[in-house]
Image 1 (cartoon, rainbow, N blue to C red):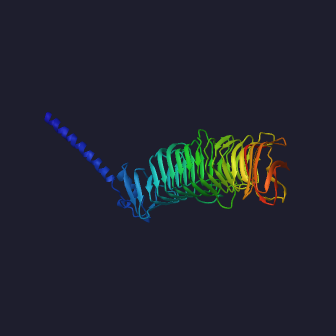
Image 2 (cartoon, one colour):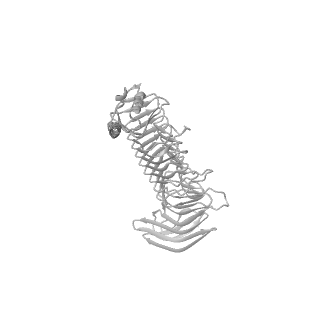
Image 3 (cartoon, rainbow, N blue to C red):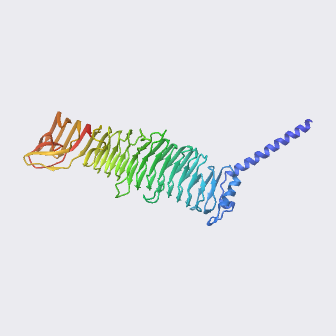
Length: 489
């Protein structure tokens, strides 16, 4: 009996060793790259190579493998390769699926996907996805995480993506996907603004822990970046966004949505078309997404640079609004931070109780602050402004009335006026209050050189003006700076 037990023990050891050797052999094989040609792929762009990829899947199953693609592969039926299948293109490798055929490679680089369908699509459970250094040309979506998609860690890095629908869409409204890096891509949602279908360069709905950075968005048929639903911890920064056919960025509020960081982007409308909005925090039945950091952006060529919704607070300091009809608009709520504008006829436009930080304009505006609410309700407030007023020709050995700006409903604060041309200088400050048609001036101080002197504030035809003396005719233009409460209703 002891001898039989020894024999059985030895046999069991050999069986265990046998299966261990098989597993080791499979793992070793998986470390070596293969090509679809080894599984029967023709790679001439005409023959159907889907069966070869299916044989590859059968051979390796769930084991990791590196696959080199070096030809043009036509795919006539759906293929879905897991993330531990690492596809690497060499010698201009291309994959060309037929209509309504989905070729999914969850880990690929240096491959060209040219498809009448989607470049990559999933609505299932996936993690550790990577699409890198790849060119995707798709009539449908470029990359789509849809509806029930769940998992974590998706790197979309240094690709060229042109799509007929959304170029990159994170639409996990019924799922839960987190950890998405969209970095260094060239992106375009093709078509024109009359096309009602989706057309976002980047769309985000409900994802978490998402970074969108250092991308060049060449074109967007609808808004370039669209963010909605219960998203969390989203950062959109340092992107070049150009040729926007509609809005630049849209932010929609939903239950459990969190404030986003949207900073240091350059957002430009298509040339010659001052329409749409650069950054639009939409106000709808769900309210406006509030508390977002919208600092340091450069926005060009829209109807409104920043439209910040209602009952919301946003930090917008350091942003620059150029060539827009209105620099910033807000129905109710407030903004914080100083922004810059240039060639914007209207600096700020506000509804009842709205409040804006300071605006430094590089050009003279037609209107400083406009009230868009109903007469009789609380008005809108601007905390300060600065711009250079156009020069006028002064009197020769006489006094000149120089119009500064139209009087609002009321204002109270520190006014600074500065003119300098060689030795001719006026520097003037005063605490100024205007209310109920009355102008009050306190703590007035001035320093003057050259032929100009004796500045004094006054009102003329519903405008604030400065009257000053000039011993000889000069071209005089003032830099105007005001900080305080500038109120309009």
